Image (cartoon, rainbow, N blue to C red; front, side, top):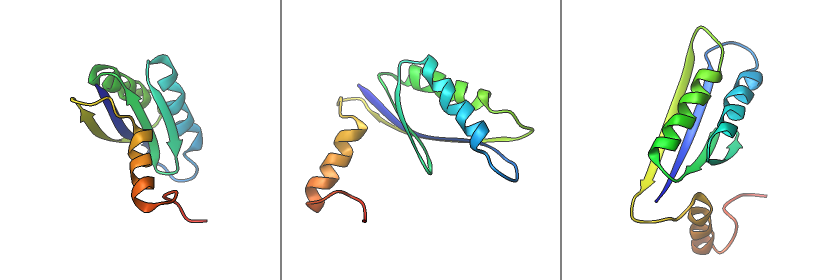
Length: 102
């Protein structure tokens, strides 16, 4: 089984959130997950929902602030081991090119 998720954790504040977001991303290092951060969040891959939820909770708790906003979107493919990279490859095949503009 592969669990793929999009996680976004940020303090609700004015100004740059980069330092706090970095704390959330760094917290993922303690877990058996792979991840990649992009401008809208962090894509995480885990072998189980238990590991994913533990990592997401640690990321949430790593952020300091009076108010923290966390969004977690999960794709729990219970009958497949297809990872996030294979999803992108499938779209590339359909497009006949990379799914990005130059």
